[in-house]
Length: 392
Length: 127
Image 1 (cartoon, each protein chain N blue to C red):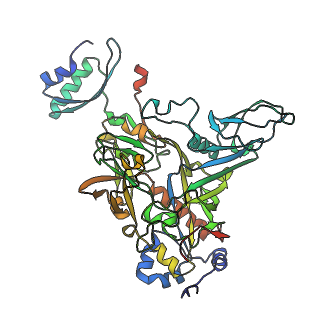
Image 2 (tube, rainbow over the protein chains, first blue to last red; image 1 turned 45 degrees about the vertical axis):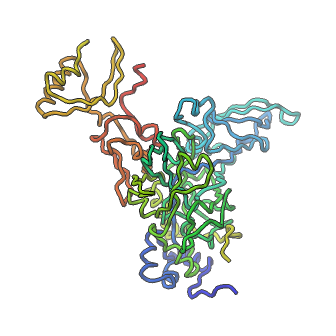
């Protein structure tokens, strides 16, 4: 039998309140005190929406571009934008530029650690900024698409379609990375100094979208979100989405778990929230600004959004030994309160913590989303299918 | 110039030095980043001496620049900064840059994901 809630609201009711300018919207940081003081039932009655935010490098990102049919027509088989290879194995003039692709001719890690100054993530930032980019296309030529070469400079506004489509964003939790070896290592979790010299972490903690809906009770296909400064959507569980990780008593995963596939119109996006990243010794990426509104449909959801950094934990992983060997070993568990405090202690080792995710930008995103909703510019999208969950 | 200026700083002006970085080619322009310890009076005399010898003297902090429009305040740079010129102000998680503490080691430049840090002097120009 489905659980009977004391406080119940529907998407429709919340959207009606948003349209009338009467919705009560708080950020995921602001709501913590409310839930603590009033309890989840009262909080669920008082609060309509909680906004979340995160701003981190998210490698599994990219954009579909349709560059328009040429005269004579061409069926692209290879394509480059600003000399960064794009995938052209789709229809005639559709290509996909992936965030981690490096510019052609980059020395990569042959000059170690590689600097990866320009890549797909930077192309996407240039497109969002409205900068001209240069497309180069090669084709083998067919009877119907005879052209074999094509070059064109364009801005994102001069081509038919530009759709940001990120297969895996907003990881629910992420490892805290350390290095036990004698040498500095350069990872996607940043530089890790030898002998546990630093511990790097990369989520916005209590402000992070999927920490606030740990069982995906409100997020799924059709959830409208803040994506790169524009309104976008969750379209599917992200790749590697894991609904059944080990969880704490409060239901929050203790390791990387759920993910979201997200989509939005790149032409509407803002380069402030889509930034090309050069990760030393690792590669290129795209730092993505993402915010998800959580509708407070009942007291369980109010309880979940009330979670604070002292109740969110992650595992500490040795990127010097265990991660590259794929052992799955963890050195221990730390809370986000400890991580944000500046020092953690693991197995008797004290180490300074380093954030890789911008909390300042995460707060800005949660605040912006809150403003959009308060002004009635942003309505909640009711998911047609929730992300896979183990909660019945 | 052809003078042992660093040695003179020690012998004539009682200054202690720590070489943070040096690019010096015979008969060409070079760059030396020094940390100097001593009394203010000796320091001023030493610097005056260097200038008299034709050395251009600049404070390193002025040479390192953070582009505030590019920096998105993530904190990656704080993992490598040896002098804590880049540090995290908690609990706001604001990333502070104090140029006067900077030793111009340049480690932050390649580590910064959006490449917000830069130096005025360009070592590659001298090669």
